[in-house]
Structure formats: C-alpha cells, structure tokens
Length: 487
Image (cartoon, rainbow, N blue to C red):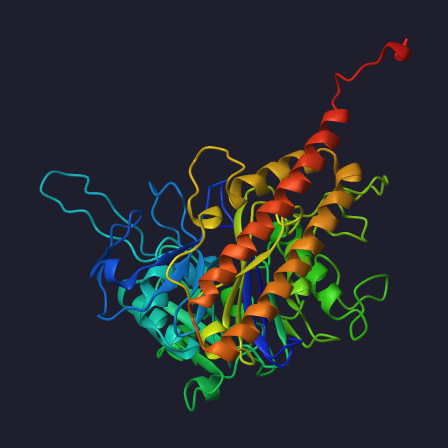
C-alpha cells in the first residue's frame, strides 16, 4: 500500500516522546478506531488474503486498532497502541529488486489447480501484522523479535516496512524478500523519513551479530548476501538500500520527492535542498534515511509533513502559478488515504496516560488530527461506529466530505481548513493537559474515557462548523451559478 512514514526519536521531540506515524493510503476504504478486547481475540489467526493459519500466544493485551469497516479483504488493523504503551504502524509498502526476489521469493498463496491437490498458504502481510504482533508485546524490541520470528517461519508475500515504539525506543524493520529482514533502532536525536522505498542507508553488521544494541537482522544475512552476489557496495561501506532496494525512474516520480520535501522541512539550515548547488534534489537517490532535525519536532510538525503537497515549491498541485512543474510529483497527502495516525508514547506523562494516538481520517491535506488516550476499554461512537454509508455523525465520513469539497475549491476553502486544523490541535492539547493533570493527581484511569468523550465532542463541533462553511463556499462556486445581472 502506498504510504508515507515519519519516525521521531525521544531526544528529537519537543516533549521527550517517541512517535511512529504513517498515512495508510488505501483504496478509499472506510476506517474506524476501536479497542480490541483481549478476551475476544481468537487463539488462531487466519489470513483472508494468504489463508495462512497461525496459533497465537496466551494472555494478549488490550490495544487499539484502525481496521477497515468492510472486512471482506481482512482486518487491516493498520496501527494501534497496547495497554503496555507500545505502538505500531504496519505497514509501509517498500521496494526491492530482482536480485533479492529471485534469491528469496515472496511466499504467495497458491490455490489448488487439480482435484486432490491442496491449497498452499502464503505468508503474512499488511493485512495481518498488527493483529499478530501488537497484543503480544511489552516493548518495541519485543515487537521486532516477534515479527522477525513470524517472518522467518511463515514468510511474507510483499515488501514492507514496520515501525514499533515504546516510551524509550522506536524501531524500524524492513523485509528482504520472502523471509529475510533487517531492523534498526531510530537514533534518539533523529527523525526517519520513509516514502515507499527500501530506506535504510547504513547498518552496523557487527552490532547486529553481536550485542544487538541498535541493529538486528536475519541470522544468515551475511551468507544470504554473499551466496547470491547481492553486494553492490564499494570501499567497504555497507548500504542496505543499494543491496536490497531499488533505484528506478518510477521511484524518482513517486517516492524520492516525498523524502526530499520532508528532509527539506526538517533540516532547512544544515542541508541544502534547493538551487543549483543543492546536496539533495527531489529525484536524488541518496537522501538520508534519518536526519537530526534543526529544531525539536512536535506533533504539529509530523502532521505538517504527512499533510504535505510540496507547498512552497514549484511542484505544489494547488499553486495558482503556472510553474511548468505543478503536480509532477506524488504528494504525501493524497485523496485515497483511509487513516493516518501518530502513535505517541510520552515518557513524561502519567504511566496510565502515556499512550496517545493522533487520528486523522481521509486526506491529511484537509482533515484534522485528533488526539485520544489509548488506555481505555472502548472508543467513543464518533470514532468507532463507522458504517459504509456517508454520515456526518462520524469523524471518518465528515472528514471525507470536507476533503472532497475543499479540494475543488482550494483557494477559497483553505483558510477554513487551516483554522479547523489549528482549532482541533489547540483544543485537543488543552484537554490532554487537563486530563494528564487529573490522572496524575487522582490516579483514576477511568478519567481517560471521559477525556476521549470530550475530545470527540469538541472534534464533532469543530468539524461540523467547518463543514458548514465549506459546503456554503463550494455552493457559491458551482459552475451553474448565474445571476440576472450577468446579462
């Protein structure tokens, strides 16, 4: 699935939180935010797409999830935070190359062709990973280890990147072919930017095969590289992106420009991103996987990055200037996004309230990010009771309506959109501050559910008010608008 990921280490953030965030760019699939009751989770998981069956551990944890409303293609839980304050976003579809895929082919479901033959299950994929990992881990490192064991045992049918965080660490795992994998701890002072490509551009093999402080990988990765002549590196360097990834013309239109936009925002002073002497351009293959930002990064910055459409550049599809380059690159904020989340684990908050999930439904360019506490038994109806029918009674469909109308009237509607975004962020932060203090003082976890109801009531009020303005604005700019004075 074509997504964009941003990861933030705890010393790179303004509040010493870790963040893993991703746009889940599906096919206009309706999404909802729910809480999974561990008592109702099955003991055996069956994938709809690959038909693989996997026995699950006992004693799962409660966790949030953002499944598809229509489950005919599977759950697609997308993202969540569990009661141990571990977050996950899965997955970022990444790239590979024929050398890797021929050496370790994808594990795809094969339906029996003849009578008497049996279907052959495939591996695991984006449909499955959140459900197979999040309820069964208590740290980010445990998440990497559990996912790695599943990949090695069952394989995968697609190339994916997965991010997992707790209050101290954020990890990024990338699959290599059908069974191999590589994972790195996000440096505490850095941000990772990942736009649908194999991302890691450096890796410490000695650490991965030793202490594993910040690097982990398949046990046979060295042999896999040597036996299949995969090493393209020169001068003793080890660049996983060159070995396992891709550098295609399509990458230069669809993927690398997104990394350029995000890097340009995060490090405007320490790197040159524009002009004839730029270090990195929109089609550069060597844009770093992680960067130390020029200033601390807040949730609002992550929101800006994941809403990006090359604003301030000649490539912005909404610019009213004829730049000759308008819309030539794939934006970050696109029309078919189902849900975007920022899983934030806040080490300075009361333990019961450390997990906060910032949720945005629909196109991030137009729709607001709403924070909710995750250590609750259920989510408010505004987030969780979503159907396949358009309705202003849910955050998902109201967000879709705002985006669909504002897109065609960008110049006049964008002021309403910006005010809406800031209002939800501001009022959301006020409520988080209020209830963080209450939980710290009173120790009542039940207060978090009360806070979520207030957060959703606020979001509904702000969303409805904005939708009212945008509907009126769009109505006045319809093509069939005439006045008698036009004659």
